[in-house]
Image 1 (cartoon, rainbow, N blue to C red):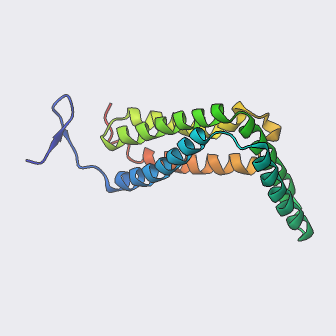
Image 2 (cartoon, helix red, strand yellow):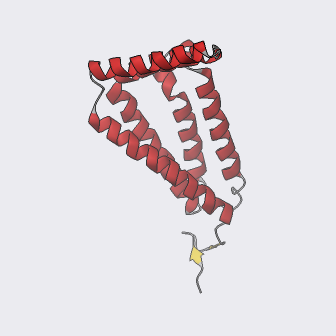
Length: 171
């Protein structure tokens, strides 16, 4: 008696527990990111004084790493520093797009949660957009490679895990 039905009156099988776990993990991650993105978007760009303080902290960290023989991270952090400056200059565009992409991700997870295959496609679009987001504002040579690789690995992992439940999702 507790069966749920799709719009064409076919009974919906019980939601896989793995899908429930993935949805909760995704909602927590995307939800916190959305809250952070909205706060940053509404708070506006950093002032020139705040940017200088941030730059000094980053340069101090870079020098400490160099002194400790960790030269390989110098390039990474110099790219992160440049990324921070560009993102601050394009603040409202960057965080506006971020919020929009996160909403696409939330919708994708929601649709998968209720059993719609459209959610899987939206989630893939969300993963692609959030990975490529930095390339909208920076040349590929200016983006930290490690950041892109990490994003691709996490996105690929979650897409793979969600794909395990495609048989449960309906068109």
